[in-house]
Structures are given as C-alpha cells and as structure tokens.
Image (cartoon, rainbow, N blue to C red; front, side, top):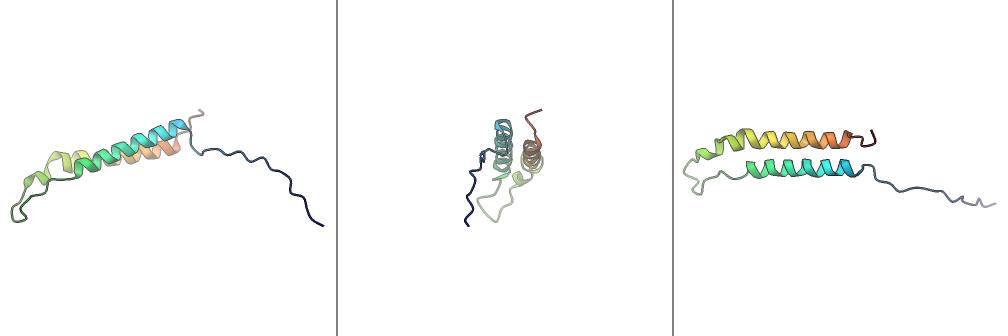
Length: 83
C-alpha cells in the first residue's frame, strides 16, 4: 500500500525582521569605518620611521569603532521588534 502524502502548509519567513536588518547594516557600516580608519600610516621608504602609525585615530578611535560595531551587531541579533 502506498501512503498518500498530505499537502503541508509551510510558510516561508525570515528569521529577522526589517528593524533587525537595519541595525545589522548600521553595525556593518561602523565596523567598515573602523577598519578604514585603521588603514594607512605606513611610510613610503621602509628605512624611515613614520610616527603617524601611533596617532589617536589608529590606536584609540578605530578599534573602539570596530568594537562598537560588533556590539551593534549583537544587539541587532537579540532585538525582538515585536515588543
């Protein structure tokens, strides 16, 4: 005997809602900005030292932005927009 398969009603839905994705994109933008601010500061001549590599932007601001971006990402994942 063959069993007839009953049609199942599976709804397709996204795990996150629009507000979650908005916060995720904001977090990604903040992380990208942090990495952009971290880049550069090298010297054209490898025999000379460039002290710009140790300025406030690369040592304090950029890593703080990256960590803030990751915190925004965690918040976006845990956010429940239905409340």
